[in-house]
Image 1 (cartoon, rainbow, N blue to C red):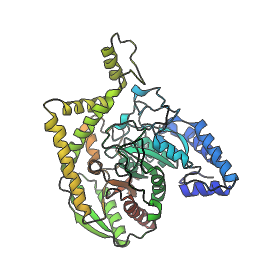
Image 2 (image 1 turned 180 degrees about the horizontal axis):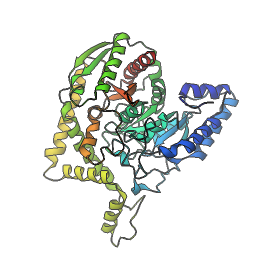
Image 3 (image 1 turned 135 degrees about the horizontal axis):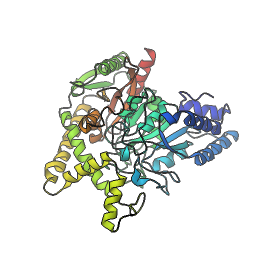
Image 4 (image 1 turned 120 degrees about the vertical axis):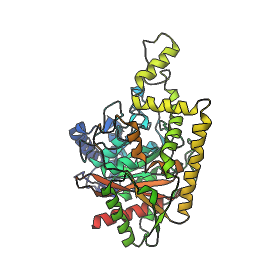
Length: 480
């Protein structure tokens, strides 16, 4: 069976009918990874024994004629910031080298219960800090669509694995754009669920009020299927919502005719690449053809999103990463003579430059005399940004905007300019701060063949409507 462009439905049906076996599909993916991933570097570790054991169970269920679960036999990769029993969990950092968690993240358990075959752990920017996947201690990930380009970050390995057919679906995490931006750069679908919709238990935290787990897939229906599996209340995560999970897959069959699509004017100003603007205009034209009502809206505090995000995210990172000190897990500087020296040397050797930069920024923002001027003020502006979205959603059902200001940029192009790198998140961080849902869906290519994504944002917990509109974009692209 050819594994290029396999969908979840195709895998499940082929396994159920006996056309192929889950074990065969897993081996085909491992063979492809062995042949091709050396030049992309998307996987950090493979979990062959666990994957083949689950695939064998799925094959036995198929032979007995049992009804197969939603992800039966589907090869899935897991971003290496999520705990997976028996596999490394490095978060792309030297400081966690050798750490193997004794438990599974809730989303990992849910995937495996639904029949997914977990192939391994995927490369990422260190502690999910980055927009290019060049900050991993284990080497950068390359974009399968153009090997001289970045795949986006921090979930670059997760996006690249789907784009390169190393997995049918993967999990990533998004703090300020780390699912949507890599999805746009690699030409795949990436979903940011509403904050609290998906459990964060077992996620190595970057910024706890912002981090979210979501899927990468080749099409919108597959994304809806994976989201359906991983969403829901988790007693192990106090921030997870007990709101019932909607039927995301079923919602895709509803027409989009009459839905109101807002276009925020602040997202289409100076700095937006003309080819991206043209592609999004084409996506909007397709939505109009499908019967949507497209109208302009305003999100007036958008210009404050980047500074607000980088105060809050770095402050939370400073707090969260204080636990990595060489005492309990991961790397330890053995040559130290005192406890405080061991702390210092472990963190100096174990953390990369970008992580150190963000810890310093966050510690400064939280320090005495600066807390009110920076952290408290940023929280107040976050409230204003959220109110902007709530006001917009009183007029429209979804918002459509760019994901990134440019297509995938070249490796090394922005590593020496942190501010320029941070501005890659200019269209994604506001949704993260507001806690709303979003999805990046492919909407064309540049003249050089680089993928372009469009961002569809929805109300809190209205992933169903958001995915319906994303599928309408996807359908219009196929028809062009």
